[in-house]
Image 1 (spheres, rainbow, N blue to C red):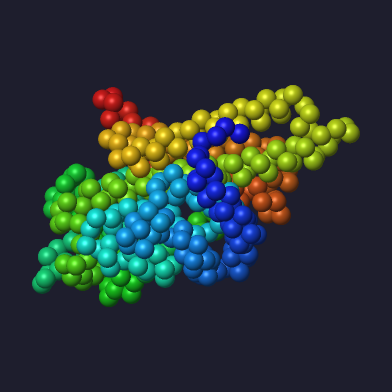
Image 2 (cartoon, rainbow, N blue to C red):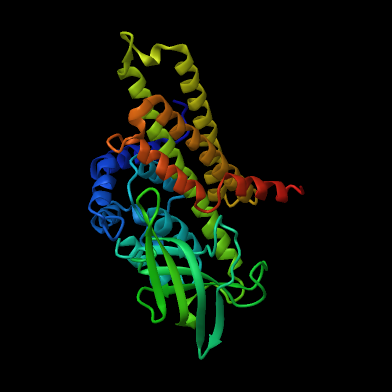
Length: 375
């Protein structure tokens, strides 16, 4: 396998790979699903992540974190994806942390995230296909604001301790300016969360905010200037989702290649047939292209490059397409048993479909790149 990581990152990879494979393999996700677990993930496991320092991976050492970057966060997310481990890591330790960085709200929320006591949810989308419109209204009320509107597809939104809500403080729903991010605490009066199971058995909530009152301290950054922290959140979330997609695709590919070596027809392994070898080689190539794209996005984010936004969209689109190929080939090459609940390969397809939609699908990002290029 090509070498993409340095020695420290490889050590981290070995550590997290063993930890997640032992503590949260696919059977862990299956058990939560079969028990119809109402939370959707294990808080005990989240505490274990904190004990190993992973919850503070993007938080500076001066604030109790590890002070690492998006490459390292991606190493963790890839193993989460490989094992289909239900976890609030992406939303909390990656996307929410990036939105909170450099704002007064960081001091309020970072200690709980580092300790594994706080789970964050991202109340960004208001409709299908991640349209990036913000219509939920935030109106001045006393020394704070009153939030009114609805959000959709809020992963962990029914149990989150912190909700990062994108709201409209000026202008119309499609305007670039006039957005403010708010930190809304769990159990706020007027907040209703309706949990729904997604295709992969994870849980996302529909949120209704009916005059939810927040004070001025709930503002993340500056009023009407929420586009910057929102952009940081989205770049981090999209890159993190791309890394998790790599894990899902890689896990499915590993499972499929093992099956090709085990399953026999006419007395020989089906992997000895050239047609399947060609398909496996093509899949490997596509996964490596996606891996390179994701690593480039992570490195540019860590370096603060002004080209990071473009690279993030390339990574999200490439990872989604390569992983879709991986899970589809996995189902095909497993044959009829690939469609049964007894075999894990189907879970990889379901998770891939959900992650592909999160923060915009491949078509969304292709369009985004085309518009940025002037088409």
